[in-house]
Amino acid sequence: MPLLRDAALTAAFDHGAGRYDRLVALNPGYHAQLRRSARRLGLADGGAGRRVLDLGCGTGASTAALAAALPAAEIVGVDASAGMLERARSKPWPPRVRFVHAPAEELHRAEVDGPFDAVLAAYLFRNLSDPDAVLRTVHRLLAPGGRLAVHEYALGGRRAHRLVWAAVCRGVILPLGTATGDRDLYRHLWRSVAAFDTAPAFGARLGRAGFERVRILPLPGWQTGVTHTFVARRADTGTDGARTGHAAPQGKRARRTETGGTETGGVR
Image (cartoon, rainbow, N blue to C red; front, side, top):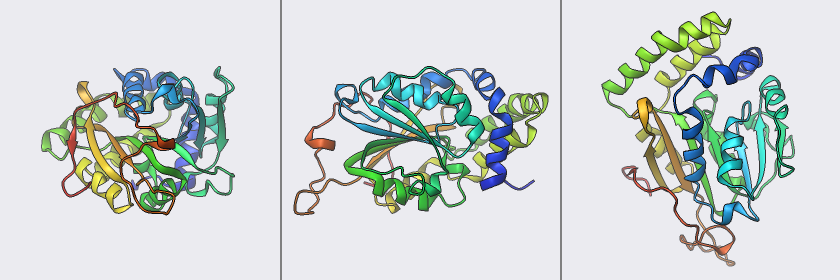
């Protein structure tokens, strides 16, 4: 079975939207790890005065993580699936959170305009037909010095990581997907991870898209070596267009709230 892409994948997410939250809740640490990735953006002052894009927000789990980590930020959640967005919009949100229906490839048509101070993309890039094009779009939407956090299934590269993922899919994910009538969606989940970049390869992809300070940070629990947070920045520019390379968005150096992880080889 080929991977689902574009309209076929959107339709699968629409079909599974009503059951999605219940299924992901069975994943130990699912919401806590999203909050960890949101904190890894490192925005100071609770995000006061900052605009944050939640790209591929789904039913709003990543949006909730951002809202918890950045209680003063303006958050825009975007997703291609109308069914997933309906679930997201049905939840209680403060006025600073809004949602937009649009594919990641067509943000300009939905008038999702920058600059954003930060972007979080959870479980998005392995589902895209052209991840490099979307990374270029994200780079353009970010303010100088803006931060990107990608929370993604990207195997660490060791055979053990691939074996763990295969065992979880065969023993848990595919049976649940079959029982709920969403087998195609969860088979896609299995295969899309196996076919996607390893963690070092995706780090290098970020560097080629123009991002700097790329770091690959592990996540705890059974997903160690399976899921990672990738953090990076758009280069700063001074008023004359020269790169400064140090200041955080809006001229403030943000406090790092997470440490550790590994630098990607050859990627700044």
